[in-house]
Length: 114
Length: 114
Image 1 (cartoon, chains in turn red, brown):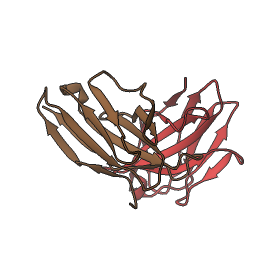
Image 2: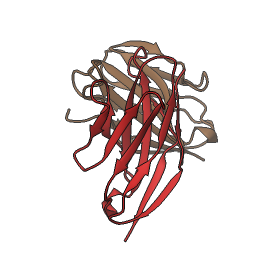
Image 3: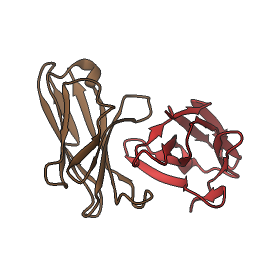
């Protein structure tokens, strides 16, 4: 079975500051890794994903995440946040033999203050 | 269609009432997933279809929950004799079944049981 732990439930940060949202997972088989973002009263949107290849993956809006197999982590980072990044962020894993079933963490609420 | 469509957007049910939630996946997507997202929590897997076959229903919380996809397209999640703990957002997602290409979530149905 797989599990995901998001280590921070809330992360307050000032605009233009860097941010890291932490995600650790456990699994006995190889996994795919994802970050989703959920803006207030909206659905889940895929931010970025790691399926294979380069361990550093990037999104179009400046976020990046690095797959670290030895530390079983997939932390999300952004060097300079904007007010518009305020949202709930979910880390998720899927085992390669599970047909696409996603296991989500509890979420991290990112609050960007001016 | 262009995205995953769920209806109704909001549903208020009296305790003990039966409800039916509909999901229209992206045209041609063979895989369809249902998730339950309680307030302040990450989504939790309920069930998974590949075409009309329900391949995994391990996440359905009780025998009051039932899902079907009779023609391999539209899916319905039915909850019988609703209880207050069923209050949540029910999310549907679809994909082409190949390496998470096009894995897309709908906006969800918010069910409130009173």
